[in-house]
Length: 241
View 1 (cartoon, helix red, strand yellow):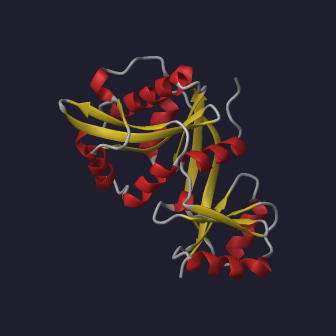
View 2: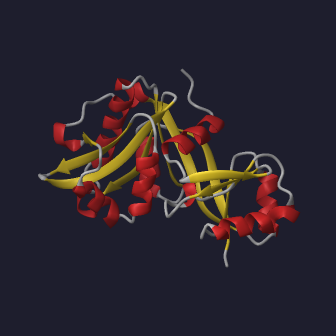
């Protein structure tokens, strides 16, 4: 089975990490994130942007107590230039990875290296909080529909890391993978990814996917070392007040 294309990846991201609400103004989709981060707060444009309407979109985003923020997807070079001309700055380029889940599920993790748990345990919330993943992002996880779970890892007899994932249309996407600093570089993240692949397969899925900022060298190296393929990229443009 072929890997999902970029359009499918955008669909999976929207389903497994959903905004609190969406509404359309013309061909622009506005998202209400409620503190859940850029992915659930960025507006997207279907087709061409009418620059004369840009102030209306900005006002609508600020009315939701959010910055003027757009996601620039593959193939939207014209939109990228329009927003640059309007004073928007590039922020957080993102790389999207995918692989057949059966390829990642090549080794069974040790029992305590990745234990499925949902609703999230208190220790999972504490690990996420320590990594900057606060209440707004936990609410995003709770909004996700369909098969979903969190994972908690114990390594060297201590809490080590946690992650969240959800499955949409056969694609399991991992989010919020966080390892405690004292437990890094010991293979914990790799075990969490492998367990996520087994969990995806057990629910009838076929693909494991993940996204991370392009600047996160450690995460990009991990996903590449697992044999995952880059299937697309996107970035944001923000207008600073």
